[in-house]
Length: 478
Image (cartoon, rainbow, N blue to C red; front, side):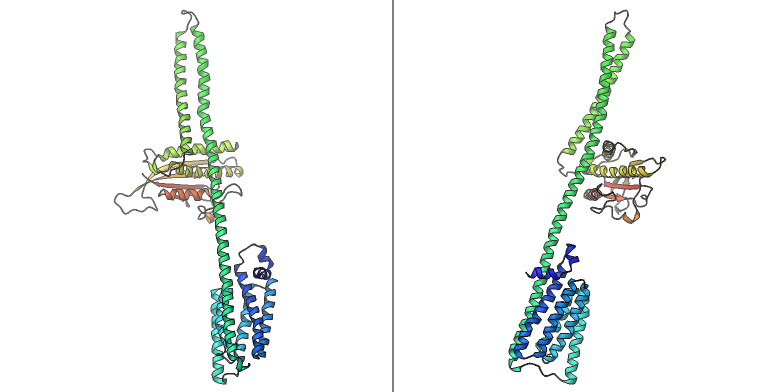
């Protein structure tokens, strides 16, 4: 019931936003409790014969209700709270003076003023109202010292009842306000927990979508890669059958009419065809083995990995995967892979996924630019590797600094604006059109590389708007 009443006084615009309404509920609750305590105090004022105090309490309660309705219909919260605290600061010194000055029970309200201010407006405004409260107390003290303590305006025979009821009422008011505050905080924490859980669930779903998207592109690339050697096997097999038919035809001729030189040439061609069939068969076999490696559960075990072979494999898979997905896709790519590089200790599936994501982004960038650039534009992606000794960011004071391998993926696409370069590794941040990316690819890649003791960087000096982007993947040598 009380919750419905408090929500009634919260501005409609705030309720329709479905925002966190904790501070609004506390503000409304404080005003309602204040109005209620004023109205209840009228009975006490009548009982002890404090007529003027009763009239002030009635006026305060009405003012509180007017502030509540004004707040509901658009009065800004800060203005409403300031009016409430101002009438509080005027009313209670008057009541204290009517009841006998600083020694009256009403003087306890001076301590409530800054507390209530902090509760409904925050810490900074509370300092101002703390000063106001102190000034009011000093003012009453000065008046009493110079003018004398005022005569209490109530029946002194009921002094004990007055003191007991006032102290009880003050404590009850404080308790109710703190109870509202704690309940509001509990609800806010519960809402925060629920929103956090929903966010985690959404993040898990998006990560799963990102994995499925990568898997789809990987599968398309693998299918295309297998198709190439199979085409060679089929073509050379058909050619082999034709050569065998020619050989049989020649062998059916009489010994005198046979062309032995031609037979030798056919046999040599057959041998070459079988060599090629064997080569492309092994190539298909290696692709299938690689696919099986990726389909196996990732144990997280890091093993010595040839970064050149990994880069070569995944740039081909990315290229063919995008070609399979979009027939209009056209781009050139080349690889400058340093020879005799040492191995890196890595989970090959994870680092392969990072490379695939970076290369996919590079191909997407050049493809997107090719749609608006002129015919002279040649979309191009370059992948290179090199050995580094304690590169920037890995400063070593040892005599034999640790070695790293740097894989660089550069494109001549649209580039990344300087204003967002610091945000690209943040979760859910994406420069792609709505629906084209989850904003998790680079974030996940960044975390994977960090878990390998390496670093994923955007080369800010080499990545400029309209001229392209360059990412550097740095991994320690095994």
